[in-house]
Image (cartoon, rainbow, N blue to C red; front, top):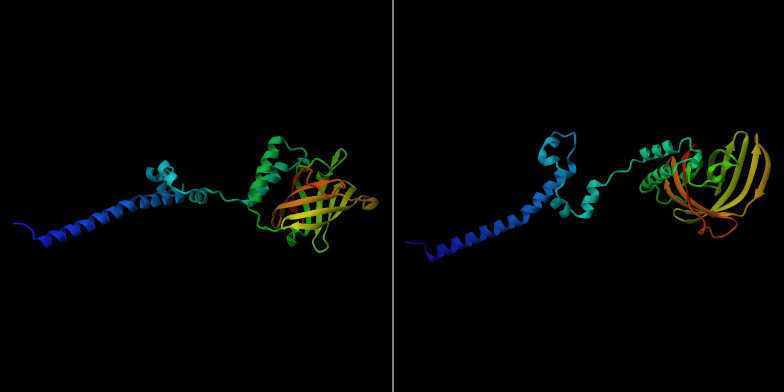
Length: 259
């Protein structure tokens, strides 16, 4: 007529186990669904045949986006930095603009944005004592309007900088036809990416013949934010014959290697 008590007990136990298994499945099913959705959305390629599927081609749902952590979203959607393209674009905008003197406000903002992107990917994290600074560099762009941009009177010249890490000396050159102005300086290392620059002499040559050379006592601070094999970015501020340059405005300098 009916099951025995032990049989009923066995059936009840089986039902309990089955119910527990169903509960576990219900708990993990949303997580599995979320993981599959995130993988599909993250690695979908426009060129893939699967991209034509209406399910895979639509963006992340609000529900899925809310469940993804900020770090997961950052890793999935963070754009890679193409340093070569950024450098070419800076050079394109700055070309023919007298080292930055003739850029428009919009061009200035665009270059600053490109500079910030490059700075975020500098391969050298401690540039102040790096041997990669050695060599001759040409100024591409600067925000300073004065002689550091190559402006001498009504003329703007070609600006280069020779750095010798072995002797802790660098020389800035401004060449306008047969006239060359030069500035000699040394430095003290203040940190992994900082120099205290000590200007020593300024002089002029015409057709290579020295005409004048005067001693200087100015100082400046350099903050190096990007360095690779062929490109440098630094921020500099200086003061006239004062030991503290922090009160002066900071200007950016972008340079590319000549040799």
